[in-house]
Image: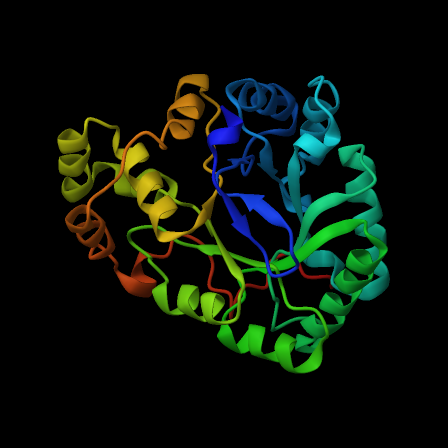
Length: 284
């Protein structure tokens, strides 16, 4: 079934599965079992982060899956306390050790942290470029970067981010940033794709779900897929993990797509932190 998942082309010549499995807020002791379930269902794209504390569980599930490492696309992200170059190098080594692999498919700066480290996320990006050139990070990208953050990278560095992982869902469509990503050949990854469950009881979405015979979550995830977002919904319930996988046997028409997009609340719909003020976890 994993072969049915479409891929998105990245600006570095590689491809990424458009649907993956996320482990945000999955306790470390539960991560291996959760990822094993996802792999059994057919997921091959796994998204983790140093901040989550569960990279080891991801690595254990992959290593015991019976599948070759090349069958998987594994993403991790640099924690906020390790933006200085030597700290980033050490933290990246720890990520590879925890995952039990000699490379990651994608490594991201988790937050730009513009109020920390003298606002110098460029030096952090330059360090990720080292990992990329060494082949230990097959692709590199960013998370929670806005156009002015991305503009600095474009002006001051050599390698464009392959992806920008940002909060996107029907209550925060983030279309201006998505358009900027597209214009600069940066793929958009959408985290919190169902707004941490907030959108699932919205009358517009529940009505569309009844009309197409799918769950509200499937409708929202399908909306993302048709918009071109890369998504990695998270659930610890096997039934829901499977349900989230079964979104390629139907399509939403233009009316449904437009109705969902019209639910946008702008910044008021944000469930996470603001990238321009986020400072949690910075090195003191």
